[in-house]
Length: 337
Image 1 (tube, rainbow, N blue to C red):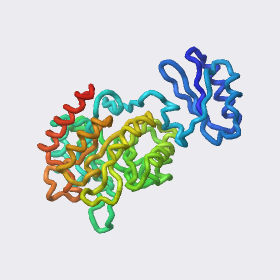
Image 2: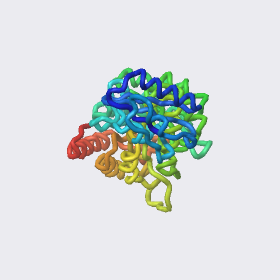
Image 3: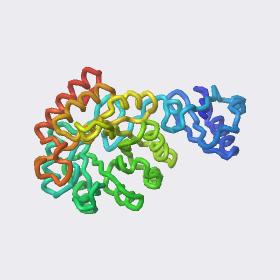
Image 4: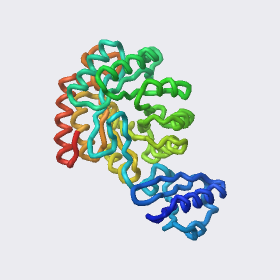
């Protein structure tokens, strides 16, 4: 249920509505907009009649939410959410480029890649310190050392950083070092992890599971939102289908679908979406044309010797060319990079 307040509703009138919601054993999530305040009712609202709230002073209208995801819904928050991260605004008219190596392998590798990302016009540096791998016998990341190297690169090149967290126990450690917490595809429905991430105030990039529907992605986001963290971004990174010519099938449809259903920013990951470096730039262009608020791609100075995902990593010169082409698409869409 969503309670829309009148544009001139007072703080006291809003407080009365919130108090009544809580009296009914439900939770109230107020969002204060430029023109009016909206109060989302969280919990089992089925026994509650909307008409009882329409009698309150300051209430304009009451609506039941048809979608199971309330806090992520545009019904609750009609305006696009802008997530601000150390001077970078995700969800605005600017298309954001996140880039860097799949895994932090060494100081030399990370610094060289960070320099290339900065020079080409990237806004955020990505890099994995903890790596979820299909095989337990391959490189799993540098852990704490990787986090320390990421922070060093952030300070050296003035690039906010994003890195993945794998378990609830590591959330607060990772939060000490990173600017954005990434929840990967394999953990999209790790509800304990989502709840812990939701208790932080760090921006979150939530990747779609490789066999998850759009609704399941939005319900996963709802876990984070319902635990108090409103700074959530979604990521389309390809899904598993019967097609074998690419690593995954990048669901370009998901971008406009998500933009219509939710106010949360949508990021595209053409690296994991295709698994082939030569397809990354075309899919990045298509994603921006479809309305993505940014892209996240893998860049490596020596992909042939990368410890993970070398086949889908762009060399610095290819990355620079991708940024240039994405910029052209963004300008055609009346946006910037």
